[in-house]
Length: 224
Image (cartoon, rainbow, N blue to C red; front, side, top):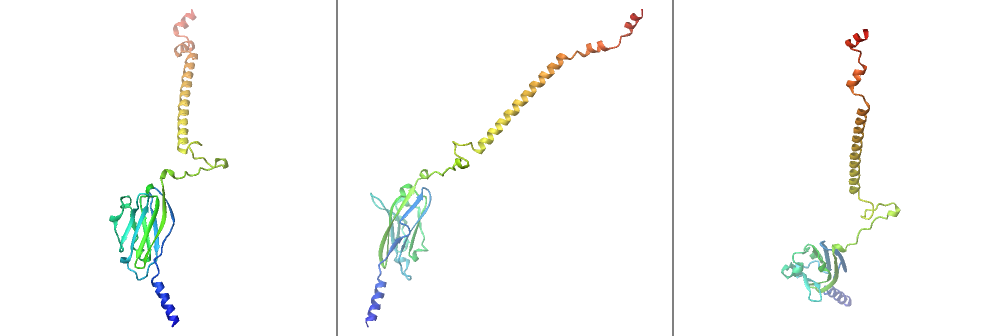
């Protein structure tokens, strides 16, 4: 008899167990304009229906709480969302029956940073859990480390050696200037050579007269 009473007490205790809500991560880190998924879990019965699930998730601030997500009897109430989150929050209805409240936030802003509270209520009771989200601006990203040039690595920074396209452009420019200078020098040398040849070479007409044989009249004069 005592055993039956104990067994009935245990079953009754299991049936009336309070709802337990947990958060997958206590802190989230994301970057501006990126997306993130926040997830809470809660205990649920296998035969529980979605219509018995109510949830509200808010961002807590010093002014007032801003509603991130509102679920009433298994149906999302998008009208309850604050303008800050309007159209940027979606939830997975398929995993809700498994006791998982998964929210997808898109196009993150820096003012989305803060403390988030999600409260879930079912026929078994209610519970809540908090998590923190930190969204950093794109300009606050740490700069990539530059290779150590002292160990033989290349320095891609502007203060180091010039980049490959810039070096290639300079080489082409220097080659073009070299070709122009060489062509100019060759032209000057050729002109000087022609001028020097004309000065030192005798005229063709005079040269022909000097070396031509004596004419007939000259031969007669010589014979007299």
